Image (cartoon, rainbow, N blue to C red; front, side, top):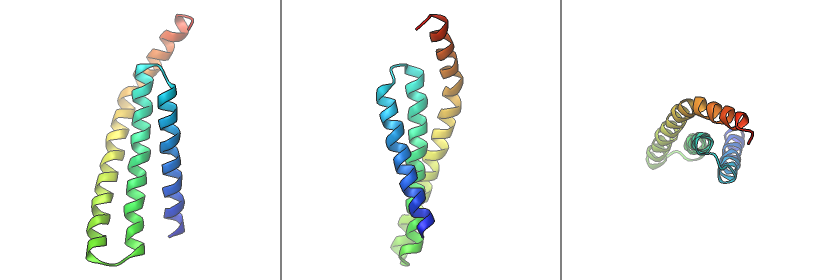
Length: 103
C-alpha cells in the first residue's frame, strides 16, 4: 500500500532528524526530550512496517511477525509519548533558566 510506504519513509526520516538533533544538543533535559521524540518516530516506523506486511504477503508467519511489529511499535510510541510528556516541563524550565542566566 503506497500510503504505508510513505508513512514508513516519513517516520524513518523523522527518526534520523531527531537523532541528529539529539547529538547536537548539549542540555540534558532537552536531550531526553528529543530522545523521546526519536523513540516515537522509531516506534511509528516499526508499527507502519508491521502494518504494511499484512498487505504484502498472506501467510501465517507474516501475520505473526506483523502482529509482533505492531505491538512493539505501539509500545514504543506509547512509552515515547509518556517520556515526551514527562520531560516537556523540564525542558521549558531548563530553557527559562538558560535565558535568565544569559546563556
